[in-house]
Length: 390
Image (cartoon, rainbow, N blue to C red; front, side):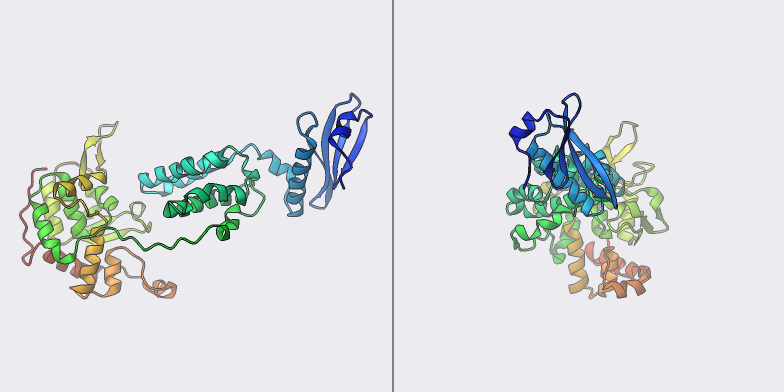
């Protein structure tokens, strides 16, 4: 039972140490100044930890603080070291983690969304709190309002919050178990049907590319190139002439999702697209009309394709969906080997053991597949009328 009361703390004047139990003491100094002291064992040694003036820290707050410091000591931590880091708030930690991760991301949009999601749904709940004071209940309070309504977003936020606490624990700012681990069972299971990106049926592709070939503009040429190479949008929009040599385009690791270089065999139809845009820019293959502050060309935004497909009255389609069109054609028409089709999309395939032995990128087999794809996409002869004014 605690030995001190609020009234007793206020009335004590005689210098000395007055115990409250469990190592917590009120120290009254020679001048009458009162402060809180915790006596505990840290790494096998007895320590006295000051916890502030009794004028600023109430008896209840002192007990809660002492309880937390004793827990840190029991778990093998150093309460004093933890307190020295206590000025760091969750928001400061999150921005630190974001800064560390940003150079590893090739997609600027993802980098913005990563931080914006925390600014919108987490910082208002406990962003200003010292990070070591945040527990599972706080994480649950942040996630619960959006868990059912925005489940996909909430799951991503949960992962991002977990990564912040993982960093904080490793950096010595958080002495407890990651609090995200304690909320999984408290959140309901949301069963949703998988939503696939809208794609064009592969049988309709030749007609689509024929229409696209008559479209003027750099965005139309870039979309053609994306379709004919089956790459991701960002890989093509950032393509540079220096990456293309002797009919092979090597996408550098930093611009691929897997962070592994991707060699793309260019069919004659894709090379024809490159011929149409040759000379527009020394560096970028598909430069934006906008230029950076340094006067150099910038890669175009992904939004240009949405506007293009709206003009083509194909607003239901997505750029990424053409990869699905290619994959369906591989399975249903060309009867391509699964490993070759997945390699063409720069996907991993097979289990861990299978991947360990699959050292080849199947380049020559992919070359034959992409040649067949180009011929199919542009008609049997591979010929397509293309506007060259960009």
